[in-house]
Length: 325
Image 1 (cartoon, rainbow, N blue to C red):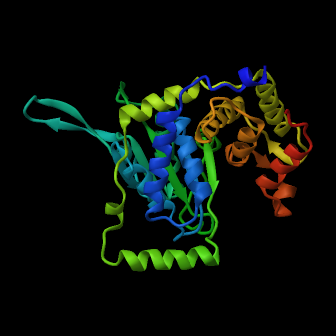
Image 2: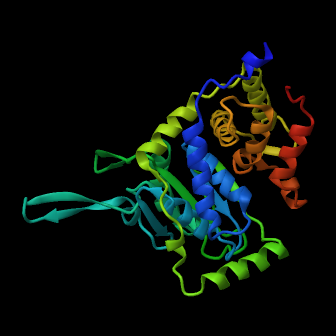
């Protein structure tokens, strides 16, 4: 009976090869940061967006570029600044004398992988332009709707230290990111390896070290496959109970929404696929719950004053729960 339960119902050979190929390409340049790479790939398979937070110089932008480089897909980078307007991101109607009418010139957001550097530097008007795009994969401009090409993924970075000239992202926008990834400094050993790797590269162009290994059609097929993976009823109940606890915890002012429950389920399926399984385990859920929830909850003012982190409260909630087996 147990053999029947754990028998592989979905062929993940192509998916496993694709993930391994992308990881190998990125490792040609990036030393360490395995957790960031794993979560970015998980978000890609789960069809979600990622917010990457860390101090400058720890390969946030470079990793995002290398992930895009490993795909046969469109890539665009947008540097957010305080004077950036929505039309700079979405595009704008331009008068075309040939047809004596206005035609829409698409902005940089009309691509497959979008890297937004320092997303918290743009004002609210520009931030709100991303709401519809990130959630519905479309943009409505002058009453006309333009659909985004698939795959479509936003990778955004922000600096947690420098706050001058920045704008806090609205809760509604944060909720549209599948993960918020906190990127730490490398270890001393990893930093030595970084110096050695870049010394070996010499004058070689970094981006040329990575070759595309997956096209857009293949990635779309893999994402569809991930959605069909098996998750048991008791695990869905566990996810719902976990998210429900965030709405009643004494240290949390604003709990997570039902969108967080869906995010945990979809991300845990993608995490299972990364591990070569076609079914979700409790460990998959525990692997994704913190990056899914840390930007979706608000702590009470007194806890913030004490310097308590969202991650710490999430750990408390998990430890107080019975984890299904």
